[in-house]
Structure formats: structure tokens, C-alpha cells
Image (cartoon, rainbow, N blue to C red):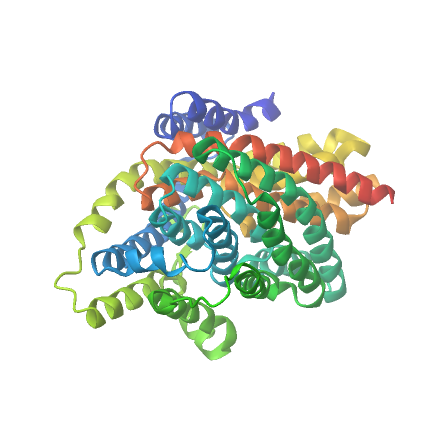
Length: 482
């Protein structure tokens, strides 16, 4: 009975989101999870503490949305977005190839540099400026982001999510990284097929599918190589190599590309990357506003405002406004989105935190779910990626999915006599692909793109994500047999 009840919030979220919409799903899910939280034996102080953590998490996501919309609004009103739209016209006459170049290359780059939902806040707007629909743009970016989040934010899911809490050695980490990257590169072909299908449904037959596959290979080959050599830099440098090779591959003879309109995004990328390169700066912006023992529950909450991409977004936006002599900062639009986003985002975050912090008198809901899946015996590796997907769906983060479920995956693999490194690679890959259906990411990215129908994005991404997770599991089983 506890196992079924533990799964109930997730089942409700998916079912109601697809039938009635995300807003009623998160509100009903919050009410049901609240009842389950107290049924689990947790008291009011723990409930308030979990809501406190939820509020801080929501604030962090809202800051990213606010910063991204602010920068884009300034660039749009000063004419830079229109210039970006036409800057790649001479690269290749095919609009679909330019779409895939930016969808793959920029999503990977911003995921590798910053993570924290940054690609979903930037790239869909650029794709929409090319003339592609908002729902399609958000869906595609989140699906690709699910492939690239293995080593997002300069390796945070691997280094902080697995190495630190599990005390893994560097050699072990390399094995996990290369295994996850190879499996993901194969499962990514299935995701790419679904993305091509989505684009065909919207824009008719595609004439350059082979070239799109070449662009994918341009990314995945260096991605897998760097996963062994320097996994924390794999996504960033693979994205840069892919963009460079693609420009050479696609560029028409005698044409020149105007990259000046892209300068704000180049500066943004530099600002996001600087803390990763300089330890003193990283230490300085690591300041955390901490709330210890919230409501005397023993729950600790905190937020690192200086680490958020919000400040780089604002700095670049103000710079654009100054140099383009903008007569206004156009704050009404970005601020107007915040209230609508909060109403949906906070309940979804609260559901996750209540499930995590429910373990006061007995194991938490998420522990019950992990224990349930561990009873699958020799077929466990097939289902291991789904634990990672579920973790990302619940928590909104590849890193936190690894933190929450990494230890139980490690222990289950050891008890079943299965390769621990392979199971942890499947956890990492599943947590990464789960970004495509994570409600936090969908709500944030859709809000930036001015989409109210969050359900449409989830409907586009759910089947590709689940099938990719299944393929990862089957490939993992094959890997173990070999």
C-alpha cells in the first residue's frame, strides 16, 4: 500500500496534466501530496519547512525567467532579434537546417555553461525569431537539453550529484561518464527521430535530414571523446566544436556571416563561464542566504542569488539598452509574467519537496519508490533510467535526481551483483533525459515563450522521453551482457 501511495502524486501529475492541463494538475497534486505528507507521519513544522524550501527554489527559477525575458525584450525592441534572424540567412538557404544548427548547438552550449534551465530560457526565443512555432521550439529545445544535461553546468550532475556524495574516484567517474555518453548518443538518435517528426508535422516534408544527422554527429563524437578525457567540459567544448564544424560544413561559397547581432549572447556566455574558470570569483559568488532549521523542523533552506544566471542576463540587457540607446527598459512584460508563472510553478515545486521531506517517521515517498523498483531483480538495469527520469521529473534537476537516487541505485546494483558503474551511468542518463518532461523546465521555458498551454509541450515530449529511457535501459542490459 505505501508503494502505491508514494507513486500517486506522480501518476496524478502526468494523468491530469495530459487531460486537464498543468495548472489543475499541480494544484490537485499539491492537495493530495499534502494529505499524504501528514499520513506519512510528518508534522506541521516539517510541512512549513518543506514549503519554505519550495519558495526558495521557486524564487531561483523565477529569477532566471525574469532575467531571460528582460534581455530578450530589450534585444527585440532595439532590433537585435530581427538582425539575428537574418544573420544566418546566407549560411545556408534551408531554414530547417538553421533551426537544427541553433537548436542543437546553442542548447548544448548554454546547458554546458550554465544549466539551471538557461537553454530553455534563451534558445526557444531565437528559434521563434526564425519563424517556428512557440510550442515546437520549446519542445525541441527541452528534448535536446535532455541529451546534453549529462554534464550540464560544467559537469555539476556528475561531480556534485554522484562523485561527491558517493565518494567516487576519478577513474570510476570517467567510466561512468563515458558509459553514459555512449548510451545517450545512441538513445539520442531516437530522440532526434521524434524531433524530426515534430518538425515535419508542423512544416511538412524535410529535405535535409541527412545533413541534420551530420550536425548531430558533429556534436556527439567530441561529446563522447571528452566524456572520457574531461567530462566536466564535454558539453561546452562539444557544442563549440559542433558549431564551428557546422558553419564550415553548411556555409555557401563566397558568403559572409554577420555575427555582430550575436554579441550580447557571446558576452552572456562569457559571464556565465567566468566563475567556472576562476576559482576566486566562483568562491565570491558562492555566497548563500541560509535559513537554518526552518520552523524548527531541522530542514535547511538556502539560495545563492549571485550564482543565478539572473545577474548576467540583467548586466547584458542593461548593456544592450545603453549601446542601442533604448528609451525604455520595457520592464512591464518580464514582470507581468512572474505572477502567472508563480501560480503554477510553486505548487509543482512543493509537491517535489513534500515527497522528499516526508521521511520523518518512516522512509520518504521517494525512498519507497526506489525500493519498489529495486525489487525487479535481474531486469533492474532496464528500469534504472526510469528512476533517474522520475527524479528529474520530481525535483526539476539532473543533479538533485542523482543526489536523491544515486545512493539507492548504487546499493541496489551491489546487492544484485550488477555493475555499479553501469547502473550509475543509467541513473545519470535517465536523470538527464528527464529534463525534457520536468514540469519546472516546461513551465519556465513555456512562460518565457509566452505559452499558456503547458500541456502541449508535455504531450510532445512524454512519449519520446519514456521510449528513450526504455532504450537506455535495454542498451544498458546489452552493455552488461557484453
